[in-house]
Length: 111
Length: 112
Image (cartoon, rainbow over all chains, first blue to last red):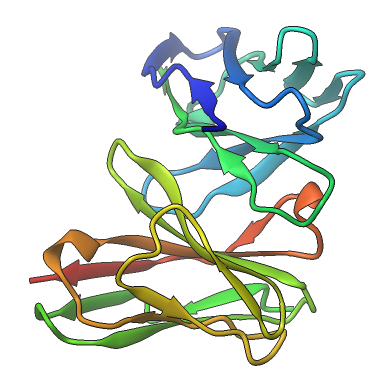
């Protein structure tokens, strides 16, 4: 069974800290990768796509390691508003097939 | 654009009742899908569709039916509600799944 694995956490970090999450995927043929953010009792929302060369969006950096089949998300200068569950998501082939979701990593940023 | 619209937002059913959860998108997305989310279980795929007239089962299809008569709408029918179907249901759509999903705001269903 194809899987996406994440540490469920919770990660409890102080404001201003740097925190990193990793995610591993089992299907080596996977094509596209994403990080979604889900706030409590809300729908998941796309945080960022993950590109082979790595990509950055403000305080957020995503990286992909195809050889080891893992994806990472780095959050610098954590804010209280970053508290959420972060979902690792994988598209396993180039066709129009369902995305595979990890169960999420919970982050709490503490004042 | 309204995006992905789910109705109702909340629903309480009695065991054995049937109902339809509505999902509509106005982005002309070919792909649509239904997930349920339970504590500790993550998102589990119920059914999905890659275009009008085409549907397929996901990981947990039992007790649910779908149809896709138009590009815009993808309703989820509960045939005979059971307490095990108490969950939060999310609809998601995409022009192509390689581009990621847009989710609706969810339907919180309680079966008593």
